[in-house]
Image (cartoon, rainbow, N blue to C red):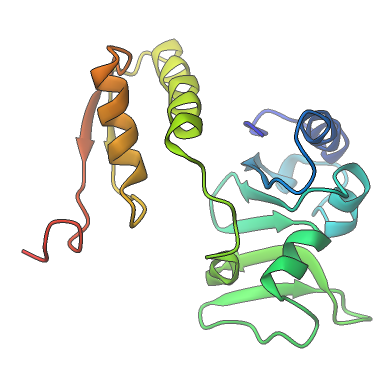
Length: 185
């Protein structure tokens, strides 16, 4: 989906989401992030907003601070999240005060309820997204990064290696290797 960090309103974010959804095959996950409801005149977004602009796609958008996830009804359904789903430890499913139904905002560890459900990007998609990030880093004078997190499949590491082989990395990368990937030593 891309970056919503500089989008000043939910209405403009929804227009961008609708545009991207129109370019995708139905059923594909629409991912992105950077939204900040603190600067949006509409306040906190809801699943219904996403339902209106992307009804054929499960949508999951990380907040700017990475502590919340904005999802639509299709994403909630795929994850089995309903009004009766308990909040996980150290997480919260925001709920409508009248109905108890999820609003579409998952906080902290509640985002993990989508683990195993969200379509993960392949290497080609990861390379394309990383190249966008590299160009943004260059535009801001950055020439090196630290990668502290990675997937169990080591997608970030494999992405950096692929870009390096293609001569497109253009950044110094300090990659943390998860203990399980290093054999536990």
